[in-house]
Image: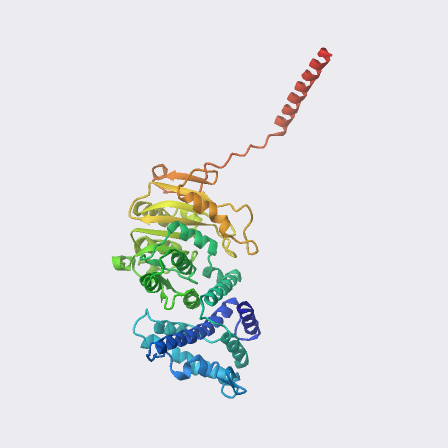
Length: 490
């Protein structure tokens, strides 16, 4: 049912003149979903308070609650158990759009100033509606979408799981749509493999400074929730004091928050900010994390004033993020970072200096070399760097992933493709696909860490025509000798 509802909403958005692409579809779906979710959350808390004999203080004023403006209802045909939309009270057409644009969004955006702290759901409401705009221009289309969203339920764990799965599918489709969509979507099988290697534990703080759609944090939540003791303290820790993120882009920020909410985290600790605007020299122990998982944007060019925040000056966004991540790790902290494979062997000063810094300050114990086509729509080769902070690197284990097929939109990466890597990574053996590189054997002038598999079976070189003819003559001579021998025996 939920899947069809999502499809129907997309069909309506496609017809509306205000939504132009998959990016718009998910942005508009997100704000409607969020308000529908907020309505159910508030109602659930009100019911719980009533059972305790207490009165619940609603976050939203009456006029801005879902049942007041989106879905006012009345009893159907005098049957108390059946309610339906009250068409006399429900706004539609231009009136509905005017209310949403002129009153609802400004009211909700105001929570950013009224909230007690950024860690509250009130603040998240203010952030979301400060960043998003309603792009649905037809009030009749919006009325249809609201009625469809009203049929969605967020009450049960099963409902939330199905909704989160569908939302992830929308994020994936947005990534496949091209343009800037790819920056929001890292293949989930790769994320899960990275998390299995890092193995975050309850009580540790997990961070992504380029949070995007929050895929790393959502998958880490699923991983940790499945493995921890379900005590009240652990659940509170997982909800409130485990997952942290920063995101610069407006739409990605909203998508990331909505994705985490659908995965079960009520008030995600995601800050809307430019991570690279922070001077890494100001990062103190209280700002550091036990685990960092990220796929920072690459190919971007940062301005000179942003570069001043870093010890190694470079315009390459991903290289600045890597410095930020190293600085943000606690001693003994663990990280898994996706980065362009050219980082391993570029000869410019910034690349050489950054590789040296990584090897000296951290134990770069594993490099996972990803095949082309891993990231749909992005024609770049990537690697994943796994490292621990505090001890210099003595040896690095490389694994060259080869799924045995060409990856692409219709043939994406799957969990089975990465099973061998996660199994072998524990003991780091030498195989045809994996090898070890000692730091002592690295050129100290270039710190070249490029992927050069020494265990690939050597291919037999093609022979020249002259060599082939000589071989044929030799075989003919041997055959003649055998035939002569047979004649003598006869």
